Image 1 (cartoon, rainbow, N blue to C red):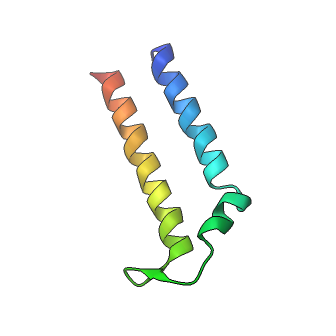
Image 2 (image 1 turned 60 degrees about the vertical axis):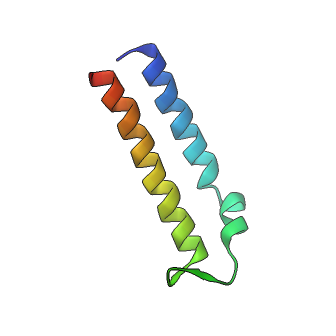
Image 3 (image 1 turned 90 degrees about the vertical axis):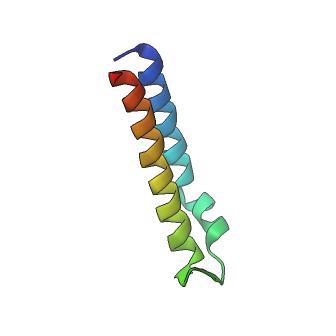
Length: 64
């Protein structure tokens, strides 16, 4: 794997570490719903889904 792709994955992992930290998650801990799902759960799964898509794109470029 190229060093550039490894660096992108490390940056993604560090960003996720910060995003899933308790102080940041308390930003989304409020009343309300998105599509019938509480905002905090929606934000957790949206961030998680976005991270999977970003890592897929990075790894797809690596194997091309």
